[in-house]
Image 1: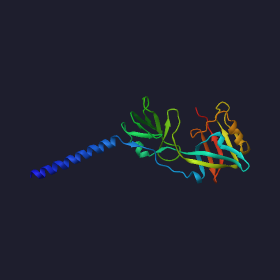
Image 2: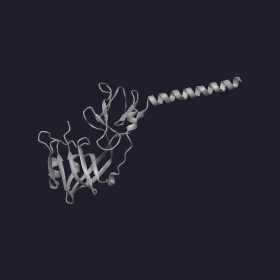
Image 3: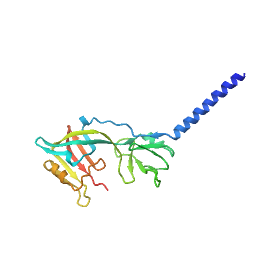
Length: 212
């Protein structure tokens, strides 16, 4: 009888311990962006956020090429995981685990750590696709580099530069792209302000937006 009681008590202790550990793990869970992969050597048709140096754009006998273009995906978080996020959890942003100190929800998304010393940001629904994306307090996003590509510009490609908000966007055609990028007043081409369109393996459009 004593042995039976000891066995039951031990089993109950294990159950309570497991439940406590489970609750602790659930309370302190950390979520990360959904894994994405792009074959940068064979980019399918689409629009991609990129970064490059102005020296990467070269006008050669064979046409205009973009060498060393870094291709990115916008970090995206699973909707169910974000909806279950609670104070005390963590979220990986740009490779760093950020503790959720405060959290507020509204019709637009989730505000994390507003007014705190810790990193603050919004989680909002993207215009296209599922899940949530990060929008920093300065309206900048977060991205993950997928690799480096060497691309050529299609004949008829254009470059639209909206960096100078006072002058407004300026568009140049294929023949003037390399020189326009070389002469641009600002040499910041990063995923927050630069995108290119790929069609049939060639770049048909480069757009740089104003970035505060």
